[in-house]
Image (tube, rainbow, N blue to C red; front, side, top):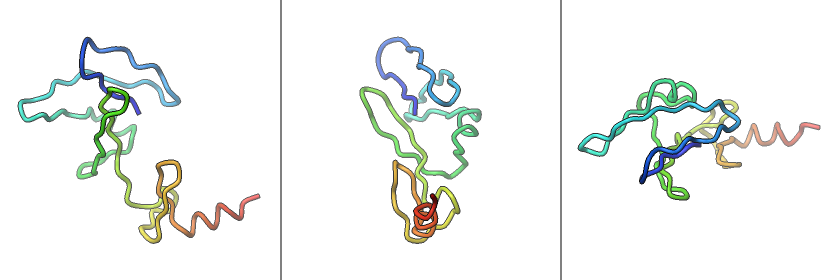
Length: 98
């Protein structure tokens, strides 16, 4: 995920597997920033979603916190694989693939 440099002028973000999308936003007096609707749609962020906000290599990184299986949406017996949640049923089904 792309970060925001916290010092100096904004630097261009190199493109990744997703097309590069970005815009400048001003932080208000309470430390809030608006995530543009285009970015929220692209990343599947909806009203009320929780975001993990942390610093990586001098950049602020925001990531949507998922609470269900990425394949079927189940909330039961979740496991993490490559920063994604999968339920036991989907793990078993994937394990049976050739």
